[in-house]
Length: 113
Length: 112
Image (cartoon, rainbow over all chains, first blue to last red; front, top):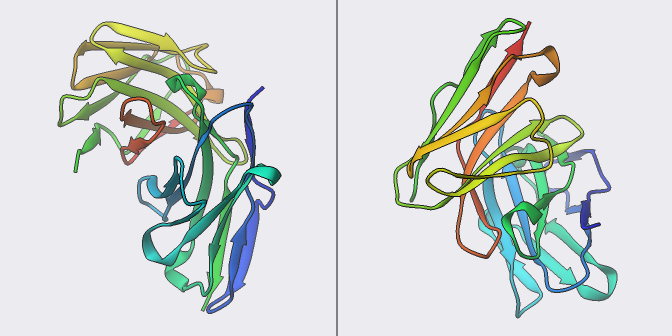
């Protein structure tokens, strides 16, 4: 079965620390991958997406993610986090047919000033 | 940007009540979705619709139904609310064949 797994459920970092959130997917063929972010009290919004091409994708607010096909991974990175990055982050995958958008369980990031 | 508006941000209902959650998009998009979001479980698809009067079950449709009489409006119905339906409900529309979703602000339902 297709699945997306996020390894970290709750991450606490100090401001200026580097961030890497893990995401692994289990899909047999072509897959589109996404990272969504939900800031406190706000709606879920797209952070970045990968469809094809350059495996290093850049998103909003200085975030990036790298698609590594051999490792079935799509980890989210940011070199220096800010307090305003405190949010919940969701990885998602899609391989055709809308019912097949699969979300990970989410990672809550808390950035301490 | 397309806006997805959910009618109620917060609702408190009693067990056995009928609950309507409404979602309206301001463009002519065909694909609309209802998810529920629970801590530690991520987002799970309840129902989706790809056109007026069309609906498909998602992963957890039990206890829910939907209505889509007009393209811009997609309603989620809890015929008889139960405490295990206390959750955050998210409506979204999706672009064709990419998996990219655009979400409303969510409706937090508490069933007592």
